[in-house]
Length: 149
Image 1 (cartoon, rainbow, N blue to C red):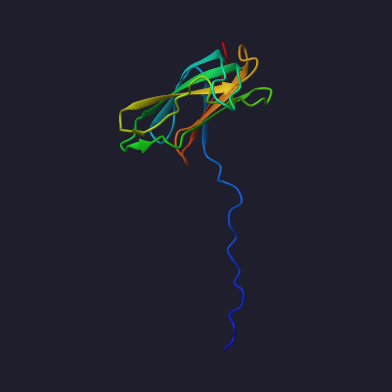
Image 2: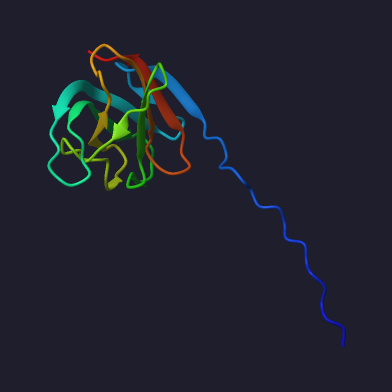
């Protein structure tokens, strides 16, 4: 009996699909076409202290994010990703120093949840930054740009 020949596997994607983005200033809420509205409640320079192994002390930005569900369906924000990068390309390095409290849980229709993120960035004051918020995997990204106080 003849042996089956090798089969050709279908080409698998090598990169993630581009997510739609909606841009706005740091001081305005960004409505997304999913019914969610994302807002940077505050962004402020802080000094963080290293308290556990692996943490680094120094200049940082604390970013408080609000996600409001204006859709008709509950939505988990457990997979939310928030990033920060300075205009000169320097990334804000997320840290556990400074007691961040990321977005968590399921947001019911009409409800909102807040989360805080801490990013090491030196100096932190007076920097032009971009904060990107993807509240759930595969959903649109809110991209905020402005200057830190």
